[in-house]
Length: 423
Image (cartoon, rainbow, N blue to C red; front, side):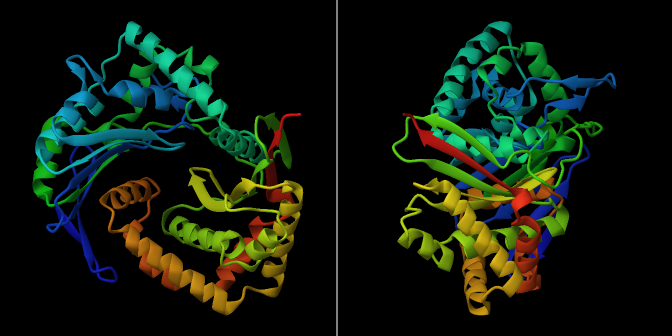
């Protein structure tokens, strides 16, 4: 195990690369009673087309990655979720557009539970009967999400911003798309993406890093496998696909999601882009921002108003969402303020204050083993070093924020998704 030192944070992380291609990161915390493990694959809802073992391209239905996450807990001996819960830990999993992760935390039985986690994730077991049963369960989940106005506003925004990139597909798929999933589909996708070289294991707590590596080497396949080729379609145009999308639902006030389509970056530049974009979100949309105060005083937004930055391979954007009696006017005011800041410059005092606050928030998040492990995994897949964020912050200037405003926050890159009350 190599020890990676981060002097700016007073922290270190142990890292090793197994012969099978698996990267392992261990954050040793002797003072913590709990232990946490996160085992993730670079495979999510947007990875629908890939090259199979025979060299032919395979097209899979939307929702397979999420479906596979549900079914991976099934083993020939029973359900791993129940087995781990009975062993004193809290296991769970999630699927995003570009990653699927399985994790647990607890205060005892770490090594035994780590073996169970690595075993059930790496050894698939599906039957036609269990797949058919799961289709019914996930169909109910999909229908619940389709009844959620916030979900509909978010996916409406993605469908408006992106012309063809598969991030516009819902991670869970549709009722129709998951009806096409078979046990063979799941086995094909598991073989392609659930191989150690396409995965990462992150753990934290009062644990021995070498034991984590030894257990992973014992449980997981020993031979390396070539990386799978994934096709995310033709390059996206700079401009959005549609400027507006609207839908009516049972809401009392219009809901909206407003997005600015960006140009994605990877590696260290991807980390810097994230920090700059999040600062721009604070500059425009946080309660500390003058624009927020004006919109709130005019009754155009309320306490539901918030913002975020998101990126996946091939796409990046900033977005704001909330309730408003006049979403179109909110869009106009936001665009006007963003263009003004890009032209006249950002207030230096406000920039410095927001930058210090953002840095402090990221440092505080390191207290969470879960947040740290997930951030390490996401950064690894993005070819970045998450714990180098202090140096990235030091390198960021106001001019970086102003440049992003001038590039991203323009009419041709702006989309608005609105959920209107039913008549």
